[in-house]
Image (cartoon, rainbow, N blue to C red; front, side, top):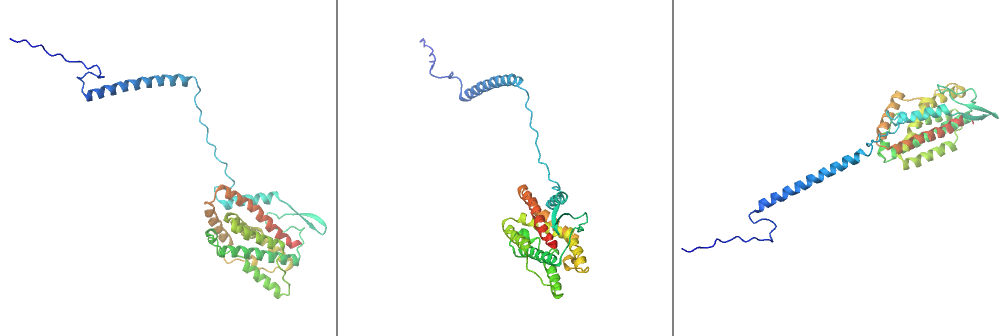
Length: 290
């Protein structure tokens, strides 16, 4: 009987794992090792963060600061302009020289002309002529411009240039010589033309304030001067076809909608133009007493 030696298995020291392990087993083993290492590192990080957080005070979030609203901003740009106009009315006094004496010229709450004013026919004619030029410039710019913003303000019913022309024609028939536009009117008309090309928001500020100032105060002054110089003749300048307050309201609403697309910087510039508008119109009004 022959005895044979049982062959021994040779170890392969160059293998990193026992040969009895298959590839899936090796993969699971390596995965377990990685999980253990990650868990240990997370525990160390948590312990470090807890110790470090305990040494520092808790973070305090900064409170959001919101911009302060301008007076009338929640209503619209026309309300903002109204607040600017009210401030100008309350703060400003005009000193005018009459017969070599200085008198303070201010309107009362109803826009009445004070007794210190001495209107002249020559000055009143210049007042009408310059107003006609300014209103005609406004209407021509709005009608002829390709700017979409201006198209919304065409044929509002507030137009005054044709009405003033009728008054000037009547005065001419009465034998009164009609003068040419004077410096306040021509300067303002030129400024409006340049402004309309440069910025719609700035031009529309003048467009609204010119009509607003005439409806609220200008027509009152015109009527009172007419009573003193024209025996109370009711001028076409102070007549509108329809409810003038409703027409002004319609313009106000359209302008507020347009201003919703303007930035705050454009609105601020628009408010600054409000002051300029009243300055230009004030120079034309003062023609009455010069």
